[in-house]
Image 1 (cartoon, rainbow, N blue to C red):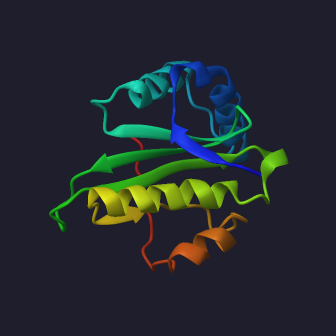
Image 2 (image 1 turned 180 degrees about the vertical axis):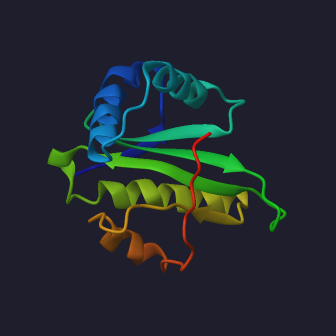
Image 3 (image 1 turned 120 degrees about the horizontal axis):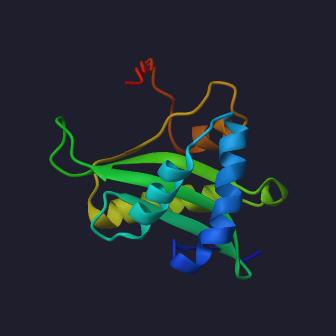
Length: 146
């Protein structure tokens, strides 16, 4: 199977939206339509710190990764937060998520980022893949919605 990892493009919206809905269902989240639309527009805006990549198999968008490139207080170069990663359920097990992560690793090395990081639920089955890239840290996430 040939997997092409590429920048998200305007014509991907319908396929991306189907995947986005599946992602939010997986995490039992409800993201408002206004936030969804703003996220989409940010990923298409070259000036935004949020960017998206998709996995394309035979012209079909079967997965995505959304990331935020930002500065940090402990590093001189940018950090990349991998915020969202999703592969269509019927396409799992073909290495697509691995390709999406590896593309970010490669981009980060080429662009001189200092770090790529992400977090996930403790019981996420994808942790087996994540552990192939790096060890889990012992930090605890505190989140306060304002």
